[in-house]
Image (cartoon, rainbow, N blue to C red; front, top):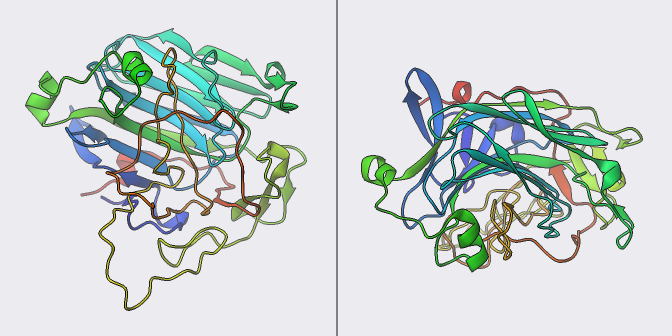
Length: 361
């Protein structure tokens, strides 16, 4: 399928693909609508699509149908490499509700979540929109604003920082199993309970699924006062990971191999080395310790947490064996600890991504 590249082969060239996948996305015709299926077979971590380019403020919309059944979670989120995050999440046992949430640097704050009524999310297409600006953040459903967050209301005197998502992020669409014994009890409870793998959708299709009809991304200009010396990548100039530490530069974001990082992109696999049997199924922005979308230990609100790579938007091999991407979620109790000169691949122009139009068998 054109437009989607598996994470095991993506090396950071965002111009070569629109999305990076972990798991098994499929093309499907839903009553004349060409859509992408996010699939969740039994004994898998599900499917995650991550945009190859980063957004530093913008308006992002996803037209989609969610999955259903307790324990199954569909997510549409923005996630930065310092764990700033903006969420729409859908727990499969309740298809008449969407959950909005946000995090700053991965800190679990379970008072941030809100619930929003919506007609059947499984049978009907709805358009969910995140409009992210330096001073305001709105969540909308089918063109109707359901929540507004003002940056001015998020100041934390303890950290002396705005607890507001403020760093370049990637768009992620995912379907993942929250209701499994691998997850914390709070995660399982939040998702509605353990997954029933004999549910109707699994019996008929072989997996749970969500349908993504279209994703549109409009990138806003960098915030006033941002440091700009190029238009190819984002870096942080110190380890605080705040809005005013991000620079727009002309730096290479393409790795020579999966062993490379943003700090050392030219690491190559030894010519005499045998292929590794350890999976390197890492979507940029996720690592083996945190998930692409997952709930923390509390479980009272929907949420997600994911580690980042210091790799300029390209994957790194994991030191531990795991299937696909980790979805055991959570976050940290403290802010992020960054390496200097951490590179993120960024698009400085407005882009329109229609997934169905990107795919061809």
